[in-house]
Image (cartoon, helix red, strand yellow):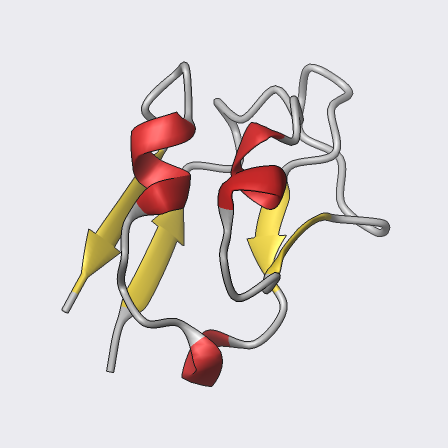
Length: 68
C-alpha cells in the first residue's frame, strides 16, 4: 500500500496534483490552511492510491513524497 506525504506547510494549493491524479483521490483541503493562507492538497482515499507518483512529478515545489 502506498503512503502519500504532503508537506502541507510548503504547499501553495495550486491544484496541479489534483488534476494529475488518475484515480481522482487528491483534493485541496476545505478545512485546513497553512501559515501562508493556502489550502494544502490532501489525499481523500489513501487505500485507492496506486503509487503512480503523478502528483509528485507534477508538483512545482516538490512537496509530495510517495512511499511504497
